[in-house]
Image (cartoon, rainbow, N blue to C red):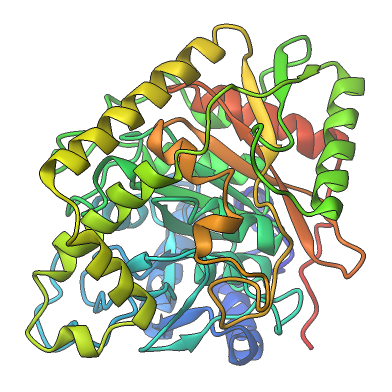
Length: 463
């Protein structure tokens, strides 16, 4: 049962073949069996999950589900406020003994639409890096090979979905944090247009930060986006409600559209096996009728500007922490904190201006190409518990994520879908980027990838 997609599960609910209670019990068993190995959850609440499943079962029996995903077992990253559950964000510096009586917009929409909340998934401390380990819950591991990282910062969500520990999850993405684990775990992860999913409290990472749906199929991601994109007055940057349903837009025929394929963005170093797998997937798309041209978008690495925006956001947040926190936080996060304090307001404004210029450049690029296709991550999954591959000489996680953080800066929608597997059996993702507000187009192209280059629907076996 845990091999089914959310769409398949809901179809089975409608016929009575499967009940939400049965699906939830299967997900809880999967967590019990798999999570000792993966460490994807920092909190599991079987009582809350069972209560939600029973209520959903009653609605389905009466023929009155309250949403298109009513009763689907779902997890949520421990960055979103959840009423009744602590939100510790992977940190020992946050006091768990305080009122937890407010839902974030994401959590509220999930509850209102009847999804069954299983628990909360792991994150690096304050979601600061592209892998998932923290001082509070330890190292999260990839279900395809537990010696490897699932990526991050939504690594717990990626591992949970890939391992069948719930059909859906919601992560955050400030520099690739939904797309990196989607690539490393062989699932689908979407960073929608900035403001498409309301966020509250506001992220200290500002205009870089997005929330995003994660699932085992493109259609499931579209269904979940329909739920998450509903308005919430607490986010002043939230977009108006979408004009149509993403679950319908995902079926759009995109054959004949123009796609640019950039295997390196013109400057990134890419693992040869990753490049070969993604290039092969793109060739299949071209054969299927998407008009593909290999070309670069024409911008240089914006890493320096990204580092300013990222580290100043971290420093602003950490400066609010209790005295003594510097000695307790992840050492890598402490370095980012210290780096952020060195920048001036002028530095921040200059970096933000570069971010805006990059967005304008990409806007012009998309006047010629409907979408841009790249690898999602430049390398395959590597050893768990490290920020960069041991012995690589890399200095930080952005060194191996050159395809993700630029599109946080431009605020464009970008999705990662599975492209294939390495010789070692590890997933590799393909990224599709569209112009701002083209979430429907990005989903439809991703659906074409899924159609012409299907990936395994089974989950990785335990080891």
